[in-house]
Length: 519
Image (tube, rainbow, N blue to C red; front, side, top):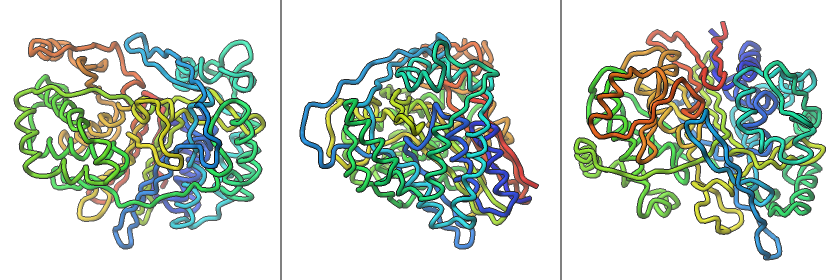
């Protein structure tokens, strides 16, 4: 087998599979899939996004994290009162409502193009231009909306069609529905420019000039100096032991990987307890989630920036104290995070792996005219910028995104990540537990119903046994019963490696995901 890939859309996965079939490695395939996702999954990602790629190199069994998340704008800008963001209410299947803050003032400096270029330069084997070909074909021919994509367009309609430019692309009078074809000519031209001239076209070139001009005209803060100063940062991943394996993920200053690793450490210490979906198993997960929330208390942001959070949380004494609280059911705290996110997992024939998560947040509703670039709204994400205050220009925002690996004896066992705001953390944790604790194959592990703690509510996805939910309520938990599977609970994409080197791949049906094993 030449490798395997899982992604949030069949066309995204197919683009990466083509590259694997041509002999490209995991990073080549991941980058090509990412460019394709800019077209196939345009409400979630694109040149206006930020993200992270975790790369495992097989020949020396090393792991490196490429941090290309968004930066705070405003370098070289005259100090002035920040623009106003607009609040938009979005409903998830009538079970949960969230507030999105959008507009030009919500846009942070994007990093996606720079990050993919840096990862390719360090690890890629095929030409940069070749990686754009599948995406360019999609942009020219258009993408027919699947039911899953149409549902996402419906949820985000007030954002996608917030401006005249958005309405021109996503429907002048009414939104696009399943079966409609979305053609992104302007984004195709942007892809061609990036293929010819690299990320410099955005970070100082003609694309960047258009972006800065539009920001200036609409009250945004991104400047030419911000784009020129943007840098991709390489980091050492965070690691945590679980069931004889090692969980490897996104380190500080982001929080998602650290907290997932912490949750797995707690579960490792607690031991196996209860069948999948049983009241015992759900309550144990909820209490671990509660402890993760508790960890995000006093000093959390400071410890993230100093890089000491993992050491503090993973200390044996702290783990034992947390295990005691879990067994006693002590309460914690709630949180929120990026909504519009997508993930790609890849492994190649040599055992190299790439795990990529990118996001435009919920999208800002700001599309740079003539480019198809939908800018992120990360300054409007409460979890990333809770006070709404202006941070130091050039500084990185934190993130819940957690592209991850599970390795055994230095070799990948699982390449995994998820979309889904703060729920992505629980989605990844539950997928890992389902594979390693409950012995499910990767497709079953992703499909299994999930839970999410949002204090004081325990959200339980459709598919869990009602009598078990009754038992959870009898223990005093406030259970919110969802009627069916829903993208609210994340969008996992994962590739698994069997004991004898067999490969399996699966995307999350909640978001129309897809997995391909390349023979």
